[in-house]
Length: 126
Image 1 (tube, rainbow, N blue to C red):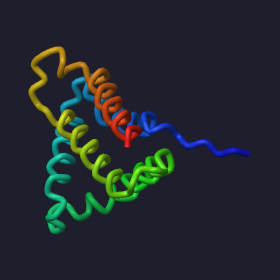
Image 2 (image 1 turned 135 degrees about the horizontal axis):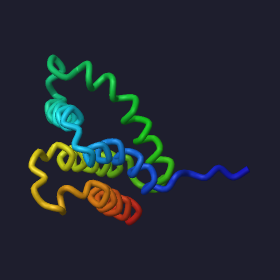
Image 3 (image 1 turned 90 degrees about the vertical axis):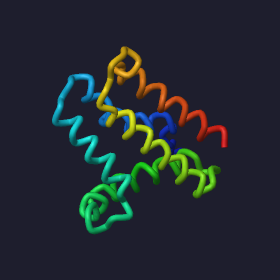
């Protein structure tokens, strides 16, 4: 049979949803965890500080990266890596924002949809 690949939008949404959906409920523990994840990602060159976290999450990141590569077989590897990095950093930045003072920044479902849509369209355009 013909094997179909997931659409890039589905893969990106599967990554974004766990990060942003839980924020809608105001879980302060989750917000602190996201901030820690964001800071750890920014400090990935400090193996002594964040090495164990990076080791734990590397297989997960690789699964998403592999799924994207299958969904976008004509996208050059370096372009895919760059786009996936910027996507992940965008999700972490939005999730770690500790001052959601207006409706725009509190609507995490809409933010997730916007980020996923923008990156999905950008990846398909390559």
